[in-house]
Amino acid sequence: MKAEITPQEYEAFKTFLQDACGILLGDNKQYLVKSRLRRILEENGLNSLGELLERLKRPGRANLKEVVIDAMTTNETLWFRDNHPFRILQDKLLPEFAARSSVAPLRVWSAACSTGQEPYSAGMIVDEFRRQKPGKLRDVKITATDISKSVLEVARRGEYEMIAIGRGLSPERQKQFFTPSANGGWQIRPQIKSMVEFKELNLLERYMLGKFDIVMCRNVLIYFSAALKKDILTRIHATLNPGGYLILGASESLNGMPELYEMVQCQPGIIYRKK
Image 1 (spheres, helix red, strand yellow):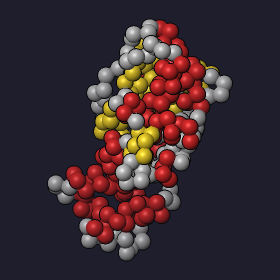
Image 2: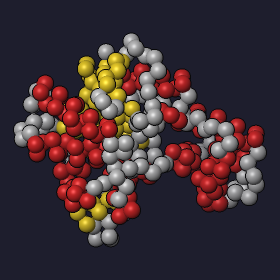
Image 3: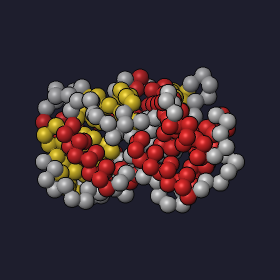
């Protein structure tokens, strides 16, 4: 990107990104836009953000739009990120659903799953619970979604470099749930991989995923406006089974919406039960 981003270009790009995927860029994030879009501009022979926006307006530019959204939404993630949600899953939610029925299926949705660390971490917790409680929760399916095709490709492969494995994964779990791959990475074991189904989904669009007992929508709502956040949480509510739970990120909370969710204190951590 040869030219500096003008205030007009930045405002126009903020509007484009919010309309396309809901992300609301804050002020003074020009450096982030430049770093994430530099390669795209170079590959398309463009010199400025304004030229990119003009190109995106032309018919037949769906692929370019997808690449831009992908670049702006792809983030690094961790295994067992924040820890509390997975402890709650292990100590409260799985025992609760197992006690309801030993044969009823358990359905979990990991929204904005990135490269798969969250849904695979949940799968590991389920596997550990099954070992402790043989015969319980035999039918568990985790649906994991993201807007980015590139991160979903990584997630579906289930193979990670050592630097990614080291982010939040204990040596004990690495040994239990991964095997070395031929190219020096680590491949997640089939009993965890088979538990998770990955799908492309824009949280602003219609959900055709079925019903869930647990929804993990963590560290993504902070990027949306208050109106979009409320809309997404309302539609997530519609996907939850009666008595289902919503788990948000550590820095996220439900302000209002008492008619839809009730807060559940887990000490430490807070989750929300569908009313």
